[in-house]
Length: 95
Image: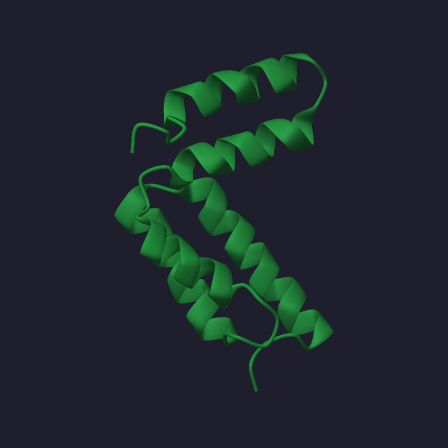
């Protein structure tokens, strides 16, 4: 745990990135900050769920809801909802 990156550090880095004209990097850092409180085992399950054909649309939207309500991870929830839509459009959901 001593080597973990802290959410405040990532948020400050995101602010610097945004001010420097790197909005995508800033968004990535903010999403990372939201996930610092998520246990590693859960992170691995989330990662696995986001791989193509590993989850249904309903499972991905439930995952987004869970992250938002349990951890306040609104940016990550939005990202997963967007991924669910793209996966549906491209036929990448579990059948």
